[in-house]
Length: 80
Image 1 (tube, rainbow, N blue to C red):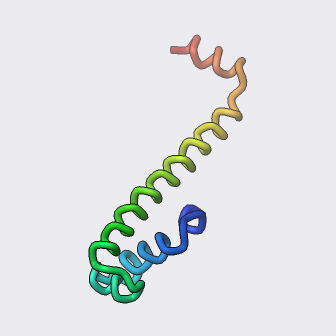
Image 2 (image 1 turned 45 degrees about the vertical axis):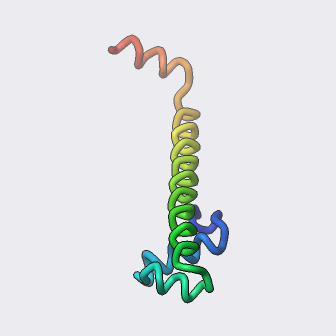
């Protein structure tokens, strides 16, 4: 889900690097980029993936908190 929400070029760079295990030179050749351009796209893609995963984690934590009502929180605080 996280990968699918990314820009197609960023997703492709990550797939080529991690799934196909291509070098930066090979990725540049496949995508028609310079070596520096491919390296920059990879770094941006990794940064964006981290941001997306952190957002998913935050949403998941909030969803978990929705299951706890105020009374349960009070009980938890009193037992500590």
